[in-house]
Length: 116
Image (cartoon, rainbow, N blue to C red):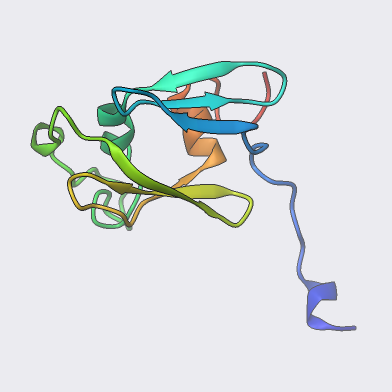
């Protein structure tokens, strides 16, 4: 029995989106499987950053002060991370957060479990 035989590969938490685009105001437009399309304002998504610099790892307490996010913030670059997340480089210099499909679905108002 090899190492991979001992590892349990679970079902992904949420299916990946079919498309992610940046709108003219910096908002993310996400097309989810089955047709729901969601628009997430850039300020809201930056405020939801789940990285250790923005959220305390041990407690989940938010460290990022929402008032410090520039109103004109926008994504400069969006990169896929495996088949479970994206990483966004923001115009305020921040780029360490991984936005999983579950986080993006919740931000879209669709719930994080992939169910429609």
